[in-house]
Image (cartoon, rainbow, N blue to C red; front, side, top):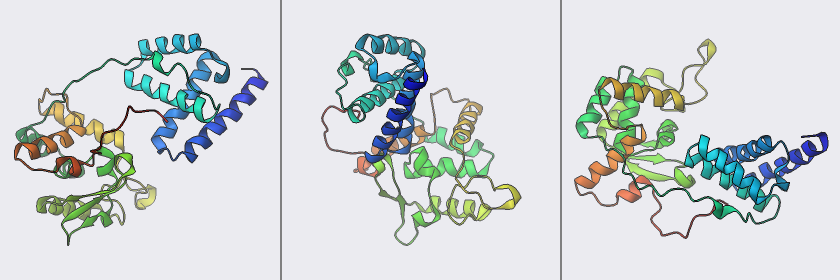
Length: 270
């Protein structure tokens, strides 16, 4: 881009970030939608406000060859937001993309497999994390960001904060899970986080939680060491929790997991 084109893009990009903030988008959404605009501008080496339908068709055809459909859909949503909220135009090419309909079912870990994973884990913090995630039916981010104050021993509940859709919920706290958390907390005694990261240099308390990527890699290693051939991730613990509750006939699983239960119209990306 020449200087004038770059200046126009910088101004529009700043408006894009401001619009995302004003719309109350989550941090991950802001990052994804902002990256979508930067990526298309870099691809064409010009400001995206002048791109035409054929430009976008060529761009997305190239993107489909190199990336997953999940990323392609995020790119589409980011550009649609840019056109609607920054340029003040409809994005008339939103229907040019038709992701394939896939109705695959996740592999479900059995109780025996979960026990093997937990018992085969050498680091106590990970061993506790697998059990807490499973026994409370939590998403990865929800479990990582559990705070000491979220544990209500008197009521036997855990306050899960800012789950999917930024919704809070309460889940039951099994006695064994409370005992595991107590034992784990005595190892680090962090004043805020139950799953604190490594201590800061100089022995100061960690300022954040365990690293998300390192936690996922640790789980993958344990699954491989156990010889489990299923496609399993930390999220599989949540699937197993729901499946095992259903198998014993527990009602209200949807509410416990924090899923919206109302029917919604066709989703938009705004």
